[in-house]
Length: 488
Image (tube, rainbow, N blue to C red):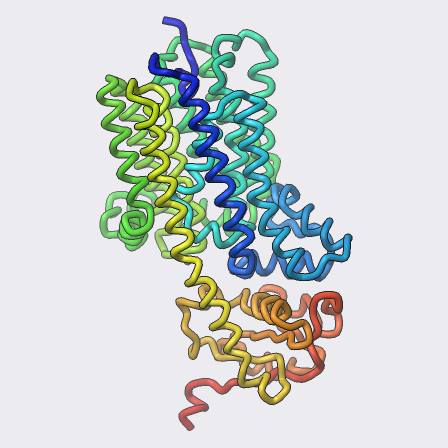
């Protein structure tokens, strides 16, 4: 039997309509994300790392690349262009938020029209929606952009021509080039990609096909090169160190807090994608693709174990969702194999995918109000100081609602940008202090002080802030007293 592509193997039932339907659904989903990126631009750019990136771009008017995540060059050119054109703060931020979806849309168009692989283009969008929630509100996250970028490789190697023409060196050389591009993104992407490579071989019985193994080898080589060529940042090294305790963690996995919280989180936020994944596993069994079903399930379990090991000490939802996002990747290629291969009417396939995509989008919009309220809450922390013309406030972390603040170190940047969007003349900034920081901050308190991230507290001064976007009046930080001092 001639080997054919996993995703371009169409059914006998009106195959052209499946491609057309995939394109239509893909465009609709992308346009929804375009609207979403504009409607919630503040919520997406004023959250944790995103606010820090945005502040640095506005302040320095140049690219801001952290942790060797060079993929952000693809997303920062548009806001910088708008800055050079003299566009105001709101316009620059809308452009920055939109630039991420524009990046996804460009990949969608390349895969759908240049590679002529519309089903994979659709499932890039579906994968982004299956397990995305929090990460869609932190636009700058490298994991989401890397996930989207990886579909260039998936879209290329799953073309009808690829397996048929593997003897042509251009085919696998381009595939390797698309793997090399992923080196600029987040390294976690290689784990689901390797699982995809093994699944690809099992689904089509390509165990004796040397070129299929070559394709898997390209993914593994990319993973090795990522760690040989790109320096690991501190927190990556710390997470890898957790594997020294992997045996102890895995043998007690059901007692691990990370496992329990992950299980609850998936069933609360991603249950429809999970149900579709289970149905797809059943579809593989129906198609007698037993090995492919086993690989899909076992590789997903291994990936979940990796999450539990890395975060066995607990972690913020911000960090955990970077990994949760890729659960949708494992679900995606399993769902897609059944979607493209199972002999059922096209409209049934499209309807099921439309429903799951709709539930994903619905979840994003449902949580939009939470992030809007969050911004208003943090802005309100500056009201007491602003009422006496002191726009800079030192606020005790013990007195705030941590569920709305989420990560305190980013609050100075979030509050400065958010207040400037409301009124440049009324720029405000709030810094949340701990008891151990209090004495040190009081000593540094001055008219020119601007307290930013604790890891680089003096990175900016008030007088150096961009006059184009901020107007932070000269004054010392107004101190909101600690709980103990308030009681006294």
